[in-house]
Every structure is written in C-alpha cells, then in structure tokens.
Length: 220
Ligand code: MG
Ligand code: ZN
Image 1 (cartoon, rainbow, N blue to C red):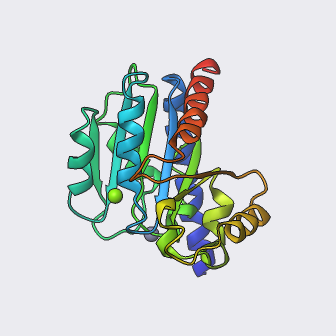
Image 2: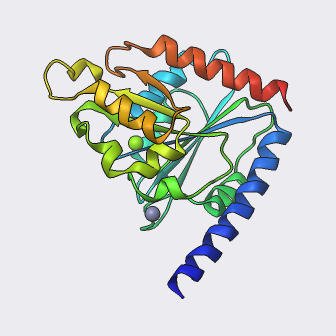
Image 3: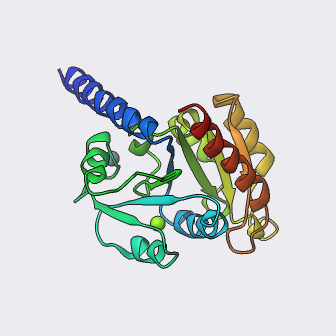
C-alpha cells in the first residue's frame, strides 16, 4: 500500500519534470541541480561559479531552502536574477515546486539555470525536476565514507565536486577512496576537486560547465 502511494507520487513528479524539461529545451537552457549536505559550501561554490561566468552567459538561479532567504541574498549581490523557493518543511525540491517557481521567472535569453537544492543527502536525489544533470558537492570535512552511506546521491549525479580541498592536508580524507567508491556506483561520473575558498581547481570545472551550456544551445 505504502509502496503504491510512493510510486504514484514519483510518477506524477516525473511527468511534471518532463514538462519542465520541454520548457527548458524551448529556451535552449542548460539546467543543473546542485545537491549536498548542509555546510558543504554549495552557495560559496555557486557564487564563485557565477562571478566567473556571468559575463559570458545569462544566468538565473533558483534557491531551495526550508525557510529563509539568506542564500538568495548572497547570490543576488552578483547581479543575477534569483528566485527563492521555501519548501515549508520539505527537505527537497520537487518538479512541481520548480514549475510553480518558473511562472515567476523570465527564462527568455537565459543560457544557464542553476538550482540549489535543499541541503540534504537523501531525497533530493530521488526527485527529478527537469534538470540536464544533477551535481553533487561533497566537502572534505564531511568525511570520505559518504559514497557508502548515501549511494543514491552518487548514482544520480553526473558530476561530483569535491570541495574544500584546501583542508586535505589537515583532515583525514582519502580522496582516492572516495573516487573509487563513487565510480563503482557510477562509472560515468565526472569528478572535480576544488576549493571555493582559494579558487583551486575551478578552471577545469568551469570549462566543463561552459561546454555543457554551449551543447544545450546547439541541440535546441
Ligand atoms: Mg546554501
Ligand atoms: Zn525530502
């Protein structure tokens, strides 16, 4: 009984996600859905990414949080349009929340839509919202056991960004072990090592992202 209810919820979600996808395609928009635990440094990574790319591409951002708009205010300072979605207790964004948010956004002329999901390593991975890719940010202080504990996050993400690598010499974090476990779960995963604080590793990440944005434009 319980299982059937969940299946119906996911089927309804996936249908709305496909509608969102059609809308994104009409605009030739590349959409990336960022997931991580709270404190992994999503917003700081996004700020650095946005300041590097905002003169090349038209960017819009959706910030998902249970409450408040602190992250949206940080993003807004970079001069890109931001929509805050407060989930009111839900620990993830779903396709319907994004659809409702899109009613208030002007996507015309946009190249890149960044979605910052609610900080949580469990259910954001279960919900498609119409994104091209999910990206997972794992920070060094969280420890290297996360692929064992939260395999779905790693299976569903096209990209893994290992953040806060400036702390690698200070904390015990076996980056090779993380990569091996992540690739065992998801052989196609693209992995970057960055420090949002120092900017180390950003060139490779930004080049990859540029390619995806251009690809989305070409194919639509
Ligand atoms: Mg944040
Ligand atoms: Zn949730």
